[in-house]
Image (cartoon, rainbow, N blue to C red; front, side, top):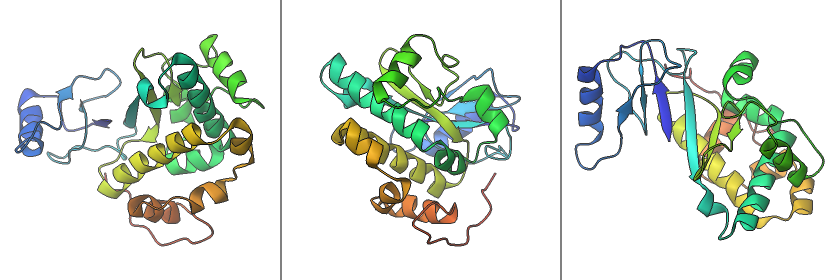
Length: 222
């Protein structure tokens, strides 16, 4: 997981302070430079200190990498499951856009879509043939070993980070275990009703995406 933060300064002392706080018991995170940020760092896992912003900065994303090996033992198995992931994103784009908290301009710049097609394989073939904007797509396939999910806006709110990871886990699970035809028949309501992780259910309710059962949400913190 890559969590971008901004506006607090790109300095070794800040990076060391964040890593010391997070890595006291085990090495969980590291910090690195990111050219898309104005005055910040990209941290792999979670941090919230030193007056950084993430959601409110407008420049930050929450990116998650999933190993291609998780989608199957062979390249053919991996391609079939990844194609279903792409189909899910295109079919349920409006719901995922709402989940992501991104603006349309942010998506156009950093996490664009490939475009809906009637068959999962058609979307994958389109992506492999150079459709989309390379790595700047919602589901980035340009990495050799991972599939990168770039749709989501950065956040320093723990429940939102956990909910995002749980959502992607559920999408990947659906892509692995449903056939193409079953996936086509899967409505967002049915998908959401099958989400059971508490942080994800809470977030879906806050975003009015969970079986007509909304709850009030607090402000998305920084």
